[in-house]
Length: 133
Image (cartoon, rainbow, N blue to C red; front, side):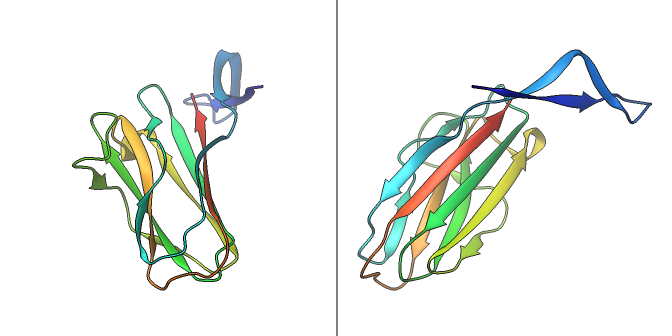
């Protein structure tokens, strides 16, 4: 079920409840992988950001090694010829982190790469996105 959030009215600084609401779509799991080798791994899908105002990516790292999450973007729904958006963000072993993007930070399609430098022996990497329209 989508949640709605008021948009701040320009000029007054107060919430505008006149029908111009942001809708938060349900969280979508875009990666759930057991990683047991070092390397760079893409999320399973790209996120459609064409009609969104914000997107937040959350990583849940249950690996016994740290990782680095890099948000990527493209003008089409493809991992081929993507570009980095913003700096990479580290996530500790058995840790969590998130990255939020606004509409002016992005390309129409966004995803993430996960880089693991040392081979983990146990654990999963899960990545979710939440889009606000």
